[in-house]
Amino acid sequence: MGDTTMWWVLAGVLVALELVTGTFYLLMLSLGAVAAALAAMAGHGLTTQLVVAAVVGGLGAVLLGQWRKRQTTTPEEAQDQHLDLGATVQVDAWDAQGTAQVKHRGAAWTAVLAPGQTAAPGVYRIQAMAGNRLVLEKI
Image (cartoon, rainbow, N blue to C red; front, side, top):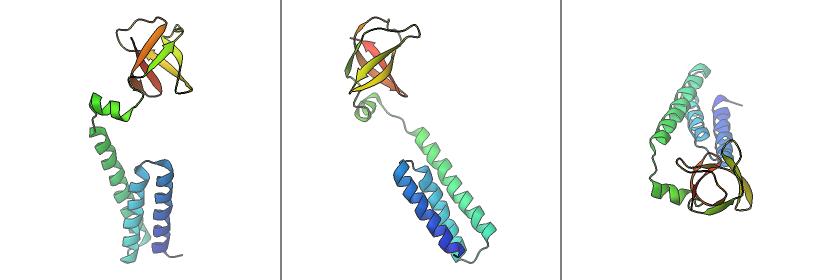
């Protein structure tokens, strides 16, 4: 198999993996593989192909990461992105670490109190999501 074919196959595999994972980083690496395939078609050696793939794919991944960091969301946009915000849950008890186990949408979630809230059993509103934890405020 020639270098050009190898790079095109690698680009296809990376795109297929991208479709499975849902991140755009593999797509950037596949662009690097496409650039290396073009370098191979132009007659450049394997070293140049590897450098082109690394530079294009790496630069694409870095630029994508910087672009994602600059994306900010307003509270209204966050509400649109997380349909759980504003929903209510029942807290039966808080543990010593300030967390509680609550049922929401048929699954068990770890919940924490929003700043300024006191731990007491009752009905709470989901104010935010911090990773895989629900941030609750008393209603």
